[in-house]
Length: 214
Image (cartoon, rainbow, N blue to C red; front, side):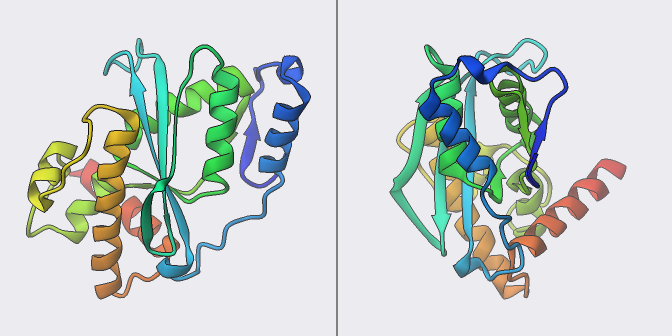
């Protein structure tokens, strides 16, 4: 087990996967640890988003995953990934891991998206990535309190920044929105002297804890 993958005690049996998929998964697991102390313009963030059957986490089932890279401060629609889980969830998830690499991973509302994704990875691959997660749901109010001073819906932040996308409630369509918000978060963070992925993750964690205590 490497530094960023935890094998689950009830892990799925992946011996039924074809050799190429198992080798791809092993290569992902052997990737080096990301340097969270590099500057934003040297870092590769991956925005991850999901589609599900509903909003009730106890009953929701993951339908599709989408991801977009913000690499060295640049956002390109071609640096993206989208896949529906059916009919081959293992392949869809392994390809997502390959695209995402070692992180850090950016989400909006980790309580929902991260939970769904980790549940599916445990069920189909028997693993839980130990990524550094950055949740813009908590981070954006800390950086842009003059726009919205509390955790809010993605639609509210879209309105605040004048952001549009090709399809709402679509894993990749909403990932495109979140990626643009991540660029805005990076810009404000730099102005505040928060220059690294580690500093963003620490601010998000601090804001989340403070909000939940009030």
